[in-house]
Amino acid sequence: MPEGDAVWRTARRLHEALAGQVLVGSDLRVPALATSDLARRHTLEVVPRGKHLLHRLEDGVTLHSHLRMDGSWHVLRRTTTAGDRPRSPRTERHTVRALVWTESVVAVGDSLGMLDLVETAHEARVVGHLGPDLLDRDFDRGLALANLMRDPIVEVGHALLDQRNLAGIGTIYATEPLFEHRVSPWTPVGRLSQEALGAVVDTARLWMVRSCRLGPVPPAAGRGASLRSLPSDGWLPWAYRIFGREGRPCPRCGTTLRADSIGQQPRARQITHCPRCQIRPSPAAP
Image 1 (cartoon, rainbow, N blue to C red):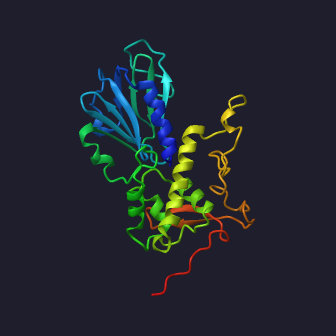
Image 2 (cartoon, rainbow, N blue to C red):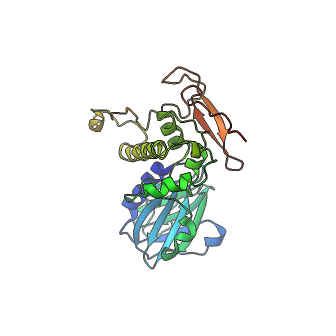
Image 3 (cartoon, rainbow, N blue to C red):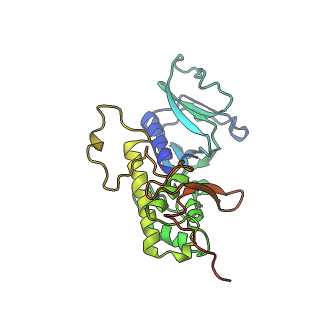
């Protein structure tokens, strides 16, 4: 599932293509929205909220989407006659759930996990359950920590993945900061100090912001000026230390990395860890 940094980049791409432009037409391919028409509305902005996307239009309407596991939004140049519905192999795929287009571009929402139209004033109906967004300029760190610590027996890895506590973290930004601070994902939150938990959250936010700035892949030759001096911690978004590297040696101690389940079904997730650097705590005494 795309994490907060990937959703932020998607929102930025859509915003740059659509903000200030008039939609010529729309095609929302879910039964509840099949007759909805967004034509003749200006796009005000496209913004992320955790892992959700909010496409705000004039007249107080928001097109809300969530990418879930396989969803994506792509911006394509229009090749059809002005006013005609865009047609191309990308727009005609059976997995496409949304098309919105201007005179010059078409935004294609493919394999979207959620698609809704809501009143902008009532966006809380679809995102109001989320905790503070790590990529929000006004991120409420105190509230995020309070949310994480409200149930002391919950495993920290599971608490970080719960979007009701803080929004935007997925398995990458739970796995990597916990490894950085030598914290087992299975440590109950109540066994961590506020300082230790805060350090994990701060690292997750720092690295998500870095990913937004640098992108998910190394810059092409000639565009690497920002990498002439590596970050002091050495972490880069295209060179994960342990995420997705189960079965390989730990970069810190050489122990074989493992991926194990955390949380309860249907919300259980696989999380990679080093059994030596991140010692799993013994069960609490009854």
